[in-house]
Image (cartoon, rainbow, N blue to C red; front, side, top):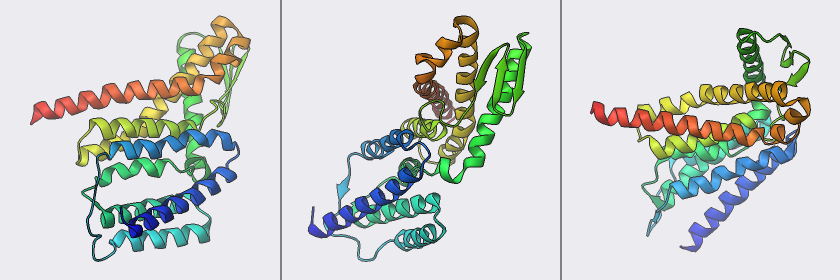
Length: 263
């Protein structure tokens, strides 16, 4: 690897670290953002093997200028999503300049590695939790269990269950999107169907998180409030990631097989 390539790579890594650290420091619960870092080694693994160009491309890719513009806008607006998009555009430019034939569709994975969902899409997170709580209320009511709900606070008989942003100990939505994105990248080939599956990750994440809320309620009713508030609640974040993984693995494998048969 030549000095020019190493310097460009070091600059890209340094820039990414600064953007990530800014989001980490701004987070209400900084420790909850650490699982998002897994997106970057997963991307490196997915894009193996890579072949470095003997000579870099003569002109910088257009995405270099796009990335620079997004970084400037993100810095001026103090908006983490724009900074993350700018960095991903710069990564694409680096790969186009120094590496041969890198799949662009995998770039959605490092985009999700930056902590921007909870900072810039807080309203989406609130809707995610509010509708999940409403669905769990409907499920328990259908089972004949008395439930009272105020926003994201559920009172199941005399068991309080609050659906808070950090109650799982993880950035639940973004962590689930990373898990689902990994499964899409592994199972689904390039094309329109790939992006349809990426779009489907949000409702799948909602289903997994709602199932977790429902299981917490069931655990509290059957085993008591102390059990539901104890280790079962603390490990709920990992449980929902496993649910998301299983949902995506089964669904995308099935879809990919049916598409092959249709051809």
